[in-house]
Image (cartoon, rainbow over all chains, first blue to last red; front, side):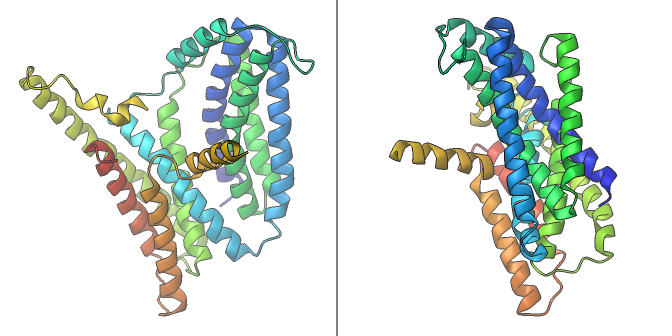
Length: 267
Length: 69
């Protein structure tokens, strides 16, 4: 994989997570106070940077075969999670990730929370909300940066891609002063899911001892195949969802529960 | 301490495994089978992982949409 693909994958994955973190930071900053919010964000970013700086170089000490097996397995598992959620959302079985409603919920909770400082922080609620939001969303990015970077022996380029995404999203967020609800998050998540699953499959199998036909060029087949399968699943599930809705509408008194309100729709 | 350990474990389980543990199990089994085919049987089983990943995704989606997850 060349550096451009590495940066692009990390950039898109990081942008998605940064949009989600921005929603939480804005809710904390606009309803509580900015100083404690920025403190929480800064501490979380330092923790994430320390994790990358400590774990990233340590991973490169492992033999490449073992590293690819473990990292490939984790990336494939991670990618399947992203694809599963993305496909269920794209087909209507699960509600789309709505930054506006998440923001409104966070704002309501922030307004209701008690004021008060701790450990030298003026507003402890704003600090912890911002810290947790940035840390939890950032952990996924750190995982992707470390695994992609260590496998390609290019941790610096992967970290650059992540930093660029954070700067772009933060810049747009500061300018808009509102959650970035119009970002096509689900499409971006599907794209990242395809990349994580493809690279996980490639590296995992390589770590298990496989020699891919065409070596690295096999990725030029794996990525489009996984993307095509993803789109096929979306189309199939959209049809079955529409058919289930039509069947439910045809018998209005039979059941009040719509297929979209299954347990998947609630998460 | 016990509660902290439990929530720490729950966080990492949710972070790595997520909503459906079967996906993770399928990936682990596929990699184990690939390694076995390569090292014990001498078969370059590059095709196994993509097939298993695609099947695991389909299986997981089927369970989710039929309310069986």
